Image 1 (cartoon, rainbow, N blue to C red):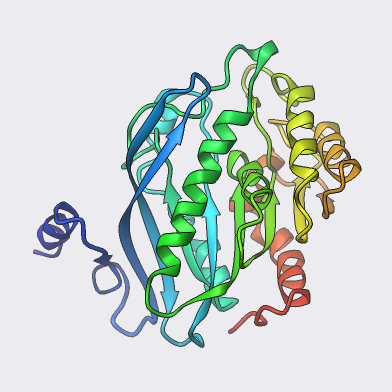
Image 2 (cartoon, rainbow, N blue to C red; image 1 turned 90 degrees about the vertical axis):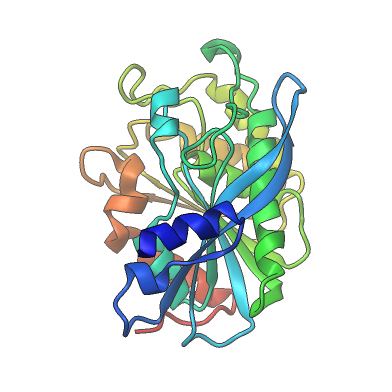
Length: 296
């Protein structure tokens, strides 16, 4: 019965209150879904307009109006993996950020999972990657998500943070470069593009172009940013992330770089597999910016 009701709500385009379906009755964490219309442009100049599915987490025990945090997912190396994403949630990480007082929004971007649609993040041949359009499209969707959640009751219009993992981490920096009012910081977990641990471990496609893109963002980003990587990142290696951050900083970007020691077999997955490594660092960063301390 609950699943049938959920399907009817989704078809109607309504926010879907999942807390009563997925969580125990005593839980305060609320999980809802909404569809957000977006328009983006790919590297060929083609414009795509459709809705993306956004999962929103909130807690009625938190003070409101609450700051908003947009959490951006990564990019699988092939179309099969992108289609298999389902609905992006990052449930444990989202719960962590909710405990810091945020309303957390996780968009499933165009070309992925339940949102579907064409691949607007394609960037061309490995040695001639043109990354800018793909990250521009992803940043458009992150900021559209922010606008939609800010329109919801209980959201603080003046305080927001953009966060992301892998492709989503670089997206967080791209979104920060837009200098959207009220966006106070960005957090980049293992951000970058062109990596493939199966065929090019630690040797991403067109890393110099990625560095030039980060430098272009550095010209605009004056808000605090936090960059988190691991030494054994099988997508980008240990050195390229440092070079990308250096290019960003040399262009004027404001940021702090943290490189963790090796985490498991592939440090690229530190965000999902080693929260004990990054959560204290992120908590300290957020508290220095005036966001609430982690709630028990």
